[in-house]
Length: 346
Image (cartoon, rainbow, N blue to C red; front, top):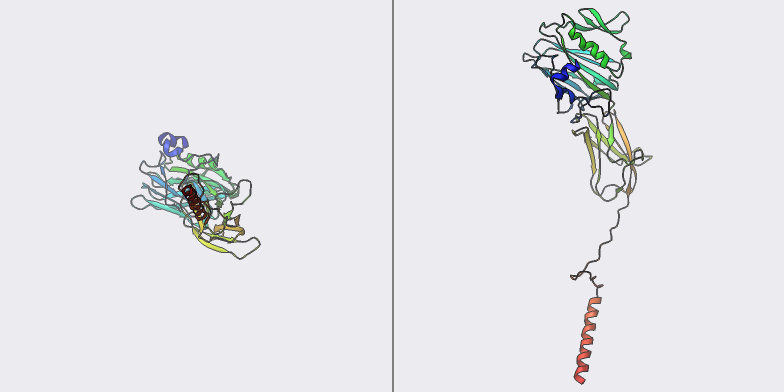
């Protein structure tokens, strides 16, 4: 099924396959992504009607942050209700929805549902009933309670116990999508892969090999901290600065999450006069406490800058100390007067 899609839409298909961070799976660099306003459009392959298209929205394209909303919407679904299979580590769920008369549909997974996700690879498979308007392929369970895939009530694949589903579900997904090739089945499937990550917050500028130390700041001036997060922009962060050993914050502020190119970003600025000299801890985390990170930094005394001596209009000549120039002029006048007097005597 994947090869067939690749042959028809190589660009749309290849844009999803990035192995920098997840060698076994699929990932798109996101516009960090809302749920985020930027959507990844998956062009339909031979598995769906030629006019169909599906849109996946998540905190970061191809990434679902556990506890963030996740949605799938689409167009061109004119054969009746569609189903969405979600298969991942220890998770198996099917949702269905009826498109409107134009074939548009949307299915939303609320944070209460994605909170149940585990880290790892997930497959999101859209099932269209085909021209018959009836889905032949359905989920089921065997007598031992294990997950199965059924064709009109007959087991055609066994997936095992839900709690045993692995962090790489390509084999399980293929067992489902390959059912489209069975005789008498006109259901069609559109699979895509996502990864589920734990929510996290990171700091920019951490000193290498320091653990969690930021560069020193200078007292008396503006202080700025920045970082990234995989949380969606519908969330907010809380920043808190305190001194080591203290539970009372020196200052705190609620921060918005801004859409970024590959990760969402945040920034925290403190205007002049900044912070008093000393050691501090900065904690930035989600308002619902799903994720937080702490970094250390030191505020040093204000550096005194020695002014450069003023120069005269003549390059390379240093201006004379105050008052000495007057004495020099008087000396010159005195010498000139002596010379004139001496010359006149002669």
